[in-house]
Length: 164
Image 1 (cartoon, rainbow, N blue to C red):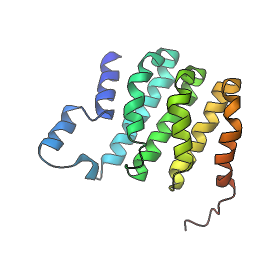
Image 2 (tube, rainbow, N blue to C red; image 1 turned 45 degrees about the vertical axis):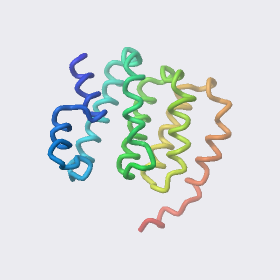
Image 3 (cartoon, rainbow, N blue to C red; image 1 turned 120 degrees about the vertical axis):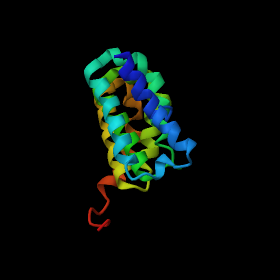
């Protein structure tokens, strides 16, 4: 399991040998058409670790959260931001109350930024993450429910045909 976790972490943090070779030869991996599919698969794998390992994955969470959140930065493309929010949502869903130590510093700020994002996919994934966090953390985050509801409410008043 440690080899799988290390490999996934190296890919997520762009430290895998295959990613270093691309940077060495000047070909930006971010420009590659396969980047989105590849990194989405890596994030899906991280979410699967949470599902399969359950609470045993919590010891690795502090290591994985920074590279996941790096993809959620506003400087990243919308597909990366949506992917990162989706990964956080999957981890919150699988680890439930186990994420409580990271709620204030990682999950809440990421959700608030995601819900304010101009991209609908990022907003959708942030709303999912908010929902599973509320479900998993329950009363522990009840004080933030009004704030979360306030930032989620514009999603319900948006026109679904607007993007067409």
